[in-house]
Figure 1 (cartoon, rainbow, N blue to C red):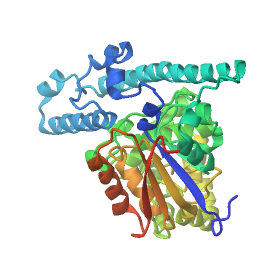
Figure 2: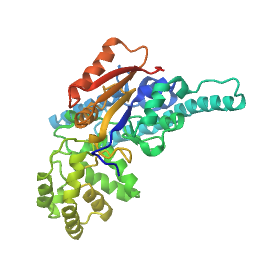
Figure 3: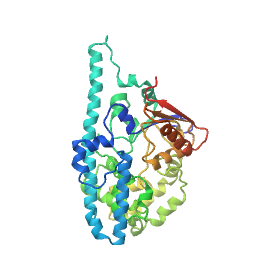
Figure 4: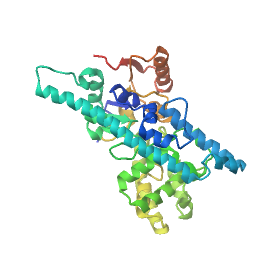
Length: 396
């Protein structure tokens, strides 16, 4: 385990622009124009005239709001005409899009990998006629990825591993991966879901991250997974706590645990969370034992929730970074800083010892766009003297 007092860690954040600069056709407009996208996008009402992933996901949340308000107002006929009256239809559309997007990106990813493998093969066959590989064309990118203790990927692809030889254990997929076939689409902005009932929790990225983590840890069958989903979505209702905590007689103990927790990061494992976990572990295990005696919930779910100290899943940066307070340098590659803003803001604000941020840009980016990203970082870092650098993707 790393020593948080001495470690000076480096983190890389990857967004879709990273894959685009490798030649992958991973834009929303690419998917929409493909046979995979046409199969599903013409069947739903989630189109957005601005062809970006973050607009598409934002539009999903706006559709949720519209339907929810119409249901409250009793405008049943309007809701029915929008094909969104039955939530099962809404969720099926979501699942169809996720499935087709997985198929599309697997194909797009394979084309990039095949091209790179062909270059490597040619170089081996004829070493006197060397063709540059992608890492050789992008040496600064390759350097930062090699130095990184962890890579936080908002993408689904294996490009860091396959193209830049980053080890699997250093890549943290915040929204699932093609390899595990568990990609996450959905809305991330809490404002879109204030006061919601449980019904639309499955469209939230936070809920989907919980589900992916439960699958990774417990390898559940279909029945256990469905039971967990029904339980976990209560964390995202207006109550914020599962009713079973009250019914099974553990609510006072759970609330007492919360009184001792001073939260800094909302989404990530940090020093405060780790210390709280150590100090309250024995209490949590006693609560778990009491809960098991009084509950009909599956023991696998009780064990999972108890090990998280009765809270939703927190993003852990893996074996490379023990705590956010270890991070001194962050490199942002291909992330627009327009999507998943709550998560990025939380990360920047919670890295209390951050000294340097590198923002990689491509040649066609405007000065206005570059400055917007710099201002976003400076607005959210804990210390105002953090060094923010703009770095060209093709920098030597």
